[in-house]
Length: 339
Image (tube, rainbow, N blue to C red; front, side):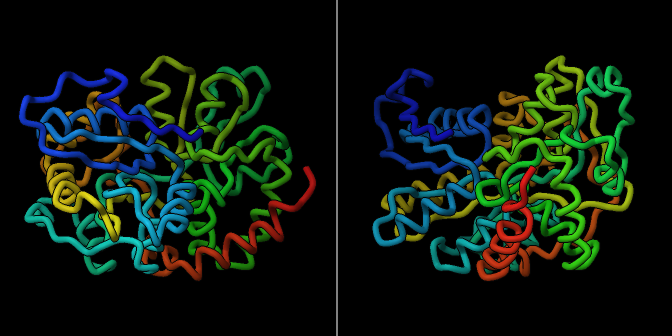
């Protein structure tokens, strides 16, 4: 759902200091529950007025492309890293080096180096499954543990996965399977999986929300989203696939042509601090692994160190041409199939 919020204007924030320091147009591809405290925290810290535009990751990349000749955003925070990588490759974002780069986990620094400074990791999470524990018990379904489990006919019509054209989460599913299985077996798997899918919503978080509300039994989701639903009191369990899995690097990029470039750089530097990451993730009740090494893992958060994670090739699968090719193939061979 498209949401464009002028945060100060709708009184979500405390009054600005008397000597306000200008403005920032923040494009955010995380959930609105996380985008809002990020914007609010920066306003509170600096007095800079933030206008927030929130969309899914794929939709945000499309907006940057549409606005390439007349950019309206200053900085893009959150959402899976592949679209950020594609935006940098297309010249839609700028390289920038914050003195805080050295404070980050290796995976965040690696993304920054691979993109020649055009994007940097701000959080990470592992791809896996969510399931409604009450629904699967009532329907006598086993909890899935492996990718192979999902194509069992007993799950027919019981699974949701987002649409990869709008969801960075779902694109990571495709890219992960291609890297694990090889492209032809991966697309054969996706075709078989299609028979078990009851919907492909636009947002990457929509499937786990549907699981939590009892609207579907299973989802392919980042496991931190499932853990967050469980922490909120919903009957949700999660699993990391036994064969191995991919992961997301939620990213941040400065938009080329930013009208408030100095404020965008100031936000970038602030958003990489341990203090900003602790405060924002705590307010939003988020359970990802944050990029700054000094941020402790929150109670209940999935531990990436214990998961069987593939060596995800961000450079290849973040490239615009590869992304377009795989999405076109999914549309042609999977998305077009009847259900």
